[in-house]
Structures are given as structure tokens and as C-alpha cells.
Image (cartoon, rainbow, N blue to C red):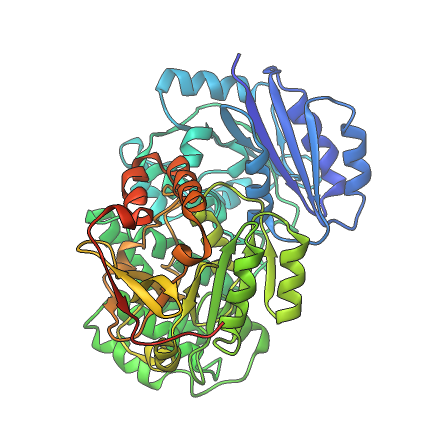
Length: 543
């Protein structure tokens, strides 16, 4: 029989949780594992879960504080072992044959994702009296099987706890976007439907409980929050290319335009102009958007909560552009110490994403005043960079490896780079340092020096393709607004910080994560084996 990993994040739904757990463990398909994560609940969730722990198929996890449903699902995915992945909500329940029906449907249809309708019930489990009116609002109309992706672009109609999909597909399209608290599931279904087969099962999967405290209930989140997340989802889809990408880009611009209209006159803040500016970038040549961009945000009130929400999604507005400099690290404390010295006073914040849960790394960050973010190592740099993007709260992000440094000229030019119009990404020249005293760099015909896309405007469209574990790919819309910098450099110190054996291990590690890149990676780290010259660097660096 097929093994299924069932993921159940729980937060403050103790009164419904026991029924949700029993509906999973009572499935006619018995070969499953149930992974449950308590996301910092303060009600009786822990007590309910303790009773379920007696079943050997159950594995329990806990966050000490509430980190959100997307982070919880991603942490559970990292622990999943099944060939298939299914989702359950703490306040919903399955019918006993759901998994068996879904797996049979997947085999018969040869689909990668199966979903099914659900029966709408109230808090007591009775058929909801307004089901006929609520269901279309929650899930839309029945989609056309020929173009599931096109129908999903109009809105989500897939109940998340009805979904069963291949774990290999989930690894291919990437995990849940942790910027999203409300529309994380819709974003994932769109990414799956873009390249894989999605099929609807005729039998109801279970019950969807509408109890007034749902995330999708009126008042659970502001309309502006929903509008922002819709823009993020469309922004990611606009990178597809072709007619689907063009349609997503149109919807992206429209979502931002509507958001700006909702905010203008209500919120007196430059962030409103920033929203119209991003809509203009998605729909170039619009005189209406250009005019609104100039005039918006001058009337209304100050709303700190709404302003913070806009800043979270890259619409800070007001004052000089702000910058986060970010490192992805794992047992690199010796390198990190120099990195922290180099970026001191460079940016508004320094952010270190640690995949090794190192106490020494945490201590170094605390001493240097840097933010420390612990994330289990997923063997994928794109995943860690997306976690950093979700955690950043500034207008721009500079990604800098722990064995890289910012040159003095680049440091001086950063304010102008951040203020430049019409640019979402800067490709920065990089010296590969051959010696520190004197400060020399390697020159070869093909690889050194090189230019790397590292400095990004933090827009809703910026998200790394998690299908590439290393040599991460910049999204298509961002590449279209990329500019090269000349005359100011980053410094790569791998050749002076590591001996030949360490460089070989580093190259082998990259090749293991991305086998197709082995030859390219080897060429970068074996510079002495190719014709080369050594030249003096034209600038220095701190740290």
C-alpha cells in the first residue's frame, strides 16, 4: 500500500482538534504517518495532542511561539517521509474513506494532485444553513478540467484539507511561501498546476467547519492584507512567461491598482505611492498609474499597523531606501566573524539565517547586533534565501555569502544604487581574491572576475525558484529590470580562507545538491588548473 504523510498544523483550535485527529487515524487507508505541529498554542491543544501520541503513527512537534501556518507546514514537510502528502486542518475533519478514494483517483487519472469538494458545517458539526451562499464565495465555481491553472488564476477553489499530492512534485515546485499567511495554499496550487496535472475527485473529502474564527472569515484579516497577498501570488505567477505569465502580470498590476485605490485618501503615507509605483512597473506606459503615483498618499490618516503591513510586503515608502544585508550560513563561524565586521554600519539591519542551529553563531550575531534566524537546513539555498526575504523588513536586500565582503567603493555607492529608478536588481562585479597581502585577484578568460545578481528591491515578485538548490535563479520579471554595475566590487575570499582540500569539499557539496552543476562548480574552484593571471585589486574592503 502507498505510504502517506499527513500534515496538521494546530493553533488554538483545541475544541475541534480531537475530531480532526480521529478522522485521520480512522482512515480505511492505514499506512500513514500523522505529523502534528503545535504552533505556540496557549489553549488545551497540548493536552489533546498528548492523548493522540499513544498511536505509533503520530509524531508531534512544537513551536515555542506562533510562527504562522506557512512556517509550520514547511517545518512539517521537512519531516515527512511519505510518497504522498496530504493536509488536514485542526478545525476540519475527513470522511473515513478520503485517503483511499484520493489514492485510487490519483492512480486512475495519473494526476499529480487530487482534490475534492467538502461539505460545509457549522461549529457543532451540523450542515451549515448558509452553505449554498458560502460555498461559491469560499471555493468559486467548478473549474474546467482543460485549464485548471487558468481557472485558479481567477481565485482559489481547492479546499486545502482535500488535497493529496506527490511528495516529489512538492519538492519540485518548492515549499509554502512564508510571506503568505492567508493565501499560502492558493499560491502552491497555482505552482503545481503550472507544470503538473491536477484532477478533481467526485466524492466529498470531508467537512469544512465554518465557525466564525476561520482565517477566511469576515474580519479575520483586513481587506488590505488580502489584497497584498493576492498581489504577491500574482507577482510570482507573472514570471511564468507566455500567455499565462502575461495574464498573471495583468492581474498583478490590477491587484496593486485596486489596493492603491483602497488606500489613497485613507492613508497619508508614501507607501501608497510605492504601491502605485510597483503597479506602474508591471504595466509600463500607463498614464493613469503614473499620475496616481505622483499624487497619492498625501491625504488621510497615519495608521501604524497598516503601514507596518505594507512595509512587510516591500512597500515601505518615505525617507531614504532601507537595506538588509543577509547571509545564509551553516557552521561558518570563522568566516562569519569577518562578515559581521565587514557589514557593520553598512545597512539598516544584518540578518543571518543559520541552518545548523549553532549556539556560537547565535552568540556572534548577538554581540554584533545582527538578527539571528534559525532555520533547519533543507539542502537548498533557494529555500533559505526565501526565508530571509520573508523575514526582511526593508526596501532592498543584499545577499552576501560569509566568505564574501563588500568593497569600499561599493559601500560608498550603495545609497545611489538603492535610490536609482527603474531598477529591481543590480549585478555586482566580484573579485575572486588570490592573496590578501598584497590584495590581488584572479583573472581568467571566462570566469574571473564575474558579475552576480545580489542586490534586490524587495518587491512581491522577488522569490527564488526553489527547484534549483544552488546557483539560484532570479525571477523573470526581476531579470527584466536588472542593471550591471561597474567600478565597485564584492570580494570573494574562498581562495584565501580555504586550502585546496577544503575547496574540493566545498565544490563536491555543491555538486551533490545540484548534480548538473558539477562541471561548472569545479571550474570555479580549480582556477590554478586553467590559464590565469593575477592582478592588483583597485579597491579594498573592511573586516
